[in-house]
Amino acid sequence: MTRSREQARPLVEALVDRGFDVVARPLIRIESLSDEPVDTTGYDWVIVTSPNGASEFARRRTGVLPQVAVIGPGTAAALEDAGIDANLEPGVHTQEGLIAAFRGLPEPPRRPLFVGAEGARRVLVEQLGAEFLPLYRTHELVPADLPDVDVVLLLSPSAARAYARAGGTAPVLSIGPETTAAAGDAGLEVAAQSRSSDLGGLVDCATAWRASLRS
Image 1 (tube, rainbow, N blue to C red):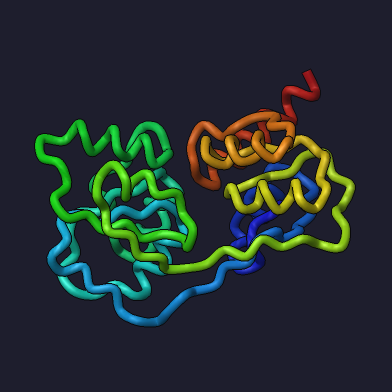
Image 2 (image 1 turned 45 degrees about the horizontal axis):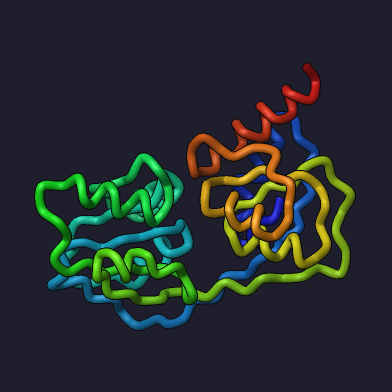
């Protein structure tokens, strides 16, 4: 399990409840970039593309809250925990999926704000004209050694790159399409991808993968 230490517990507990022997080895560390308020007054949409971005946005948000778009259920759940409901979630959990969802609305966004990680993909900026505000930085960690495991759970492209750079060779389970793409680009063997981009979906994916080995 490669999630950052601060976020590891819910996933570890869910996996243990399913009978997994979990080895936690964080491959990323999240750093907030500022404590300055994020005033959303004047925007008609805020676009959030990760649970980390959701947590940072909820912590720093001020002003009038516009409509909120999220990239997937994990991001929606993180916002909901902070009392913010999402108005739009695409069927395909990528920036391209969000753009397609916006294009299906009666009116396109006029002044959207995209909040996310420093260095995030800029598809939303390029195709929607969204203003981008980085809220956090992801540090990719390279441990001195890797444990001998049957499968690795990846929850972000950053974790995929870090695992590959550390010399990991075990098959991986991915939380979503962008993580799958990053893992493939890094030369990792993607055994399966979660059907939904949230912790529950990833736990179900791991359970199904284990069952497939036994059949």
